[in-house]
Length: 67
Ligand SMILES: [Zn+2]
Image 1 (cartoon, rainbow, N blue to C red):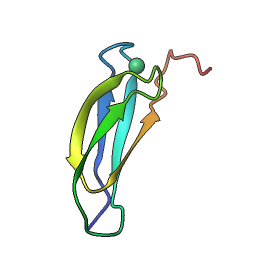
Image 2 (tube, rainbow, N blue to C red):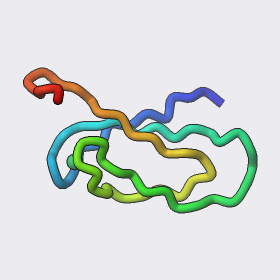
Image 3 (tube, rainbow, N blue to C red):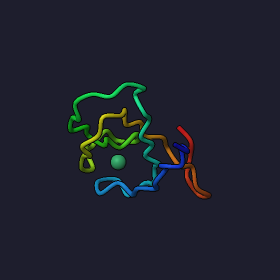
């Protein structure tokens, strides 16, 4: 399976953009609800039920100050 499961999310709390990537954990197993946490402010932006691992990464756009 190709790993193209990147999606751009916009945080409901701080309004900054981040990508959500669901990585296959490499083994079949029970699906669990994983939270999608903003990498900027750690506010939860929903969740997904997946057997994989959810990672979020900051999207730096023009005008943002990298801290
Ligand atoms: Zn945020």
